[in-house]
Image 1 (tube, each protein chain N blue to C red):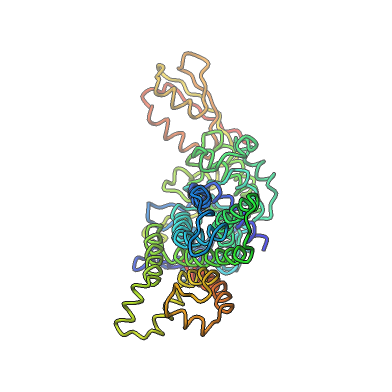
Image 2: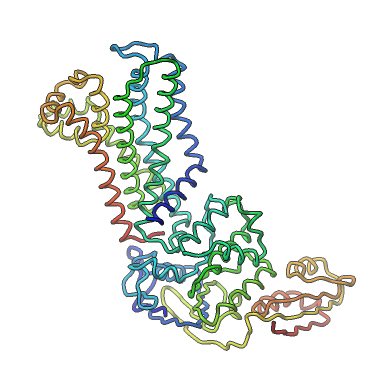
Length: 285
Length: 275
């Protein structure tokens, strides 16, 4: 579906992508990882037809640089940094829907599922929204249209747990018939979402591996945590995960999205000394 | 075409929300208001009075302000948008680069030309309400000149925006272009060049190639048919073009420069990294 052949990109004398050969097919959910300057964003921009390069990049046999409209109407893109657009949210949705020959109501439906009320923010300038709201809106625009390739740069970084959960469910709905590229600095952020890991370093692919695909993206984990004693710092942190305590702050219960399990365990590990017991039971939805 | 118009419409709305547009509109509207307030329509210099006098002054002021304003605002917003990541996102949507580039140029043209034109229309309406004679021929011609000058510098601005990789570089380049055009507008410099034995034909050719000079000469030509104000180069202009010929040239030539600059900018845009 997506083919990179001997892709090389240079900025003046600096080689940012060095002879990349990759093939990404339908059903591939790729974690594109690497440190800053590894070449992830440049690779994505080449795929979006935004950069000139040596070698070739094709989507379904077509070059995104030569046939932009034909290729880009299949691609939903969520950038890492939201653009500072002054246009109101409603105008942005209509603009994107019109270019993509999509129904704005469909995009608004996804935005609503992400926890934003499109009617309420319709007249607000995009640039005035909070980081999380911008991210939800861009996800809504990318997923609320007929796209079979999703390219997302740190898509869940600014999302609250509830929105992350909805986001994972939306990805689960698309996973069978689309290809996904999720770029991140850290594998643990996206590990449970993907079935393939591509690591880049200094413009080269240093790891390309298929990984166990046992986590159901759409699953939930019912969690119960018991502490030895109440701890205010823990209360605040676990509250951010949407947990609640019916007792004196020693017993907490909540739901963690399946793909977030690694992040959650990472969070819990900081409070190991406080833990009396913990249980996580998966329940497929 | 649908996407070109959509891009133009979006760019117009973005510009209307921008601070630079408010300042820009206030300046040109303010000029007309000030010219009325200072009683320029009542003054009589070189035999011109009323709306004609006001329009002549307005057109001279526009020539001084309009090019640099268009250049700076265009390069700052276009190159600034690219720097800020606006291009990265919006150009990931399925739109052709032609629709994007020309749509942006058309939208930008509407917002730079309309305030200047509407200020002129406002002056005419005010004059009519107060019973002044409206010089329709001059009004139409000056409107055409403003159209032509706006398109010319917008095209140059789009070319600079495409070539420069940052807003600061683009702004510096725009300023240098404007300064160069102003420099070759200066009759003193042209006089020095003639004194230094550079062929007068070459000097006049430089002046004629300068869109600012073309604009300035054409603005004069309507009220000074012999171009007495211009000195000896008037002979060359009138001999080679004639009055009507020069008036047509002064409308078409800047439009040609703007279109050519825009087209070169577009070709470079097609071949360059977009964000």
